[in-house]
Length: 301
Image (cartoon, rainbow, N blue to C red):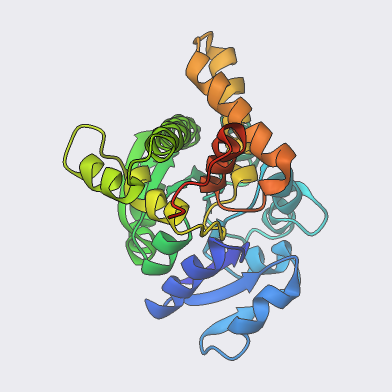
């Protein structure tokens, strides 16, 4: 089968590369064509000039985009995916898989519009950031038609270590926002704890060792603790993207009438980080907020 991959950014590019390594036939598209250059010389890979062109030649389309606006532009805009579905009964995808983190209602609305043309849509956001995308160990959180999910299993296996079917359309998007709420809260708590250790004269590196053996251990301590201590804020997942996800999570919680005071506090920390000019840095850069507030530098000897 031929796979269209649209969105070759921080996450999309390594995901598409892993599909290529798994010997899938690809047609790729990215709005910034410079990001397509690495695919030009690869065998069994074609370059498209629009989402419509990519979708019209593929059996399955995968999108990995920044936000709701980008997703709607690629799906509903001029020369978008929906146009490819409208124009030909013979030349259109049968399944579209959106791996972006967007508002669940947006996913459900797009799924309804694609269903008019007998195209199934899965909302399949991922856990993990750039390193996990490169290593092919992402986890896909999937909502939509179960048969479509099962048909895409070989693709999920090529790009990740696990795919979890959550239920009908929107279920994957809902779970992803809940996941990112927890990730952001863990990271914020880690930054606070490291600041206390540093300010009190302790060794933050030894503190990470303590965390690894007790109830305070977490993926954030393992993945982001060393980055904070090494002053490495190169982006694996940008702070501004987590801020975007937290706003979506707050909006979802409000629609469900679920009180989320912790989410609200963490969202403010991320907003402060973004307002301070650290939005394009890794989300671990929120530690800089605590450093600024306490006149200390975590990890500095």
